[in-house]
Image 1 (tube, rainbow, N blue to C red):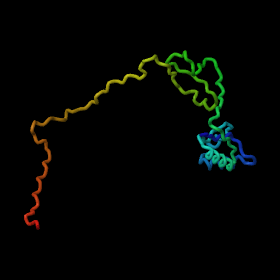
Image 2 (image 1 turned 90 degrees about the horizontal axis):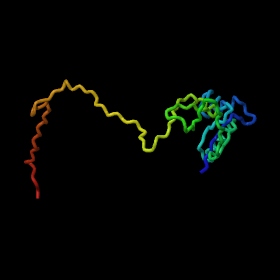
Image 3 (image 1 turned 180 degrees about the horizontal axis):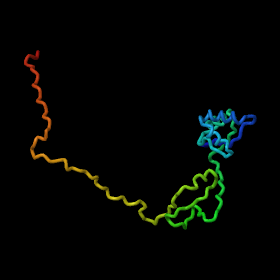
Image 4 (image 1 turned 180 degrees about the vertical axis):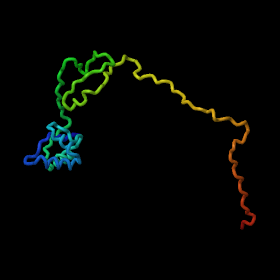
Length: 180
């Protein structure tokens, strides 16, 4: 089954005014002006994905009426990403010869991923065959409980239990007779 995505690059329908299209999209998406301004940044932004053909056409026609020119793309298409630029002193993320536990610095592939460039992520290596990767759990510790205020009663003592009420007497049925 073919799935589609709806993307917007900030293009308007010919003859549409920018302010009215922004107001229409703000009403349509129930978003504030700051979020709508992000749509008009010039970058390709996927608004909705994983749609069937009918859903994609519905989104396209609704956004077209709002004044936004959108792109409907088959999600099966491969999108080629540019390789990140190489810089001195920066180790690529796929370096196999990096020591285990060393922190790697990865270059962002575009301005969107630049927001994640300062994330401190460890470089996890591959453990030898048969090695246990999980840290050992410490033995559980018993919680400290103070029982000094309690004492034991002598064997056979009553312990203050509530005695059950005596059973009521059975009802008097001597006046009842069976007829044949």
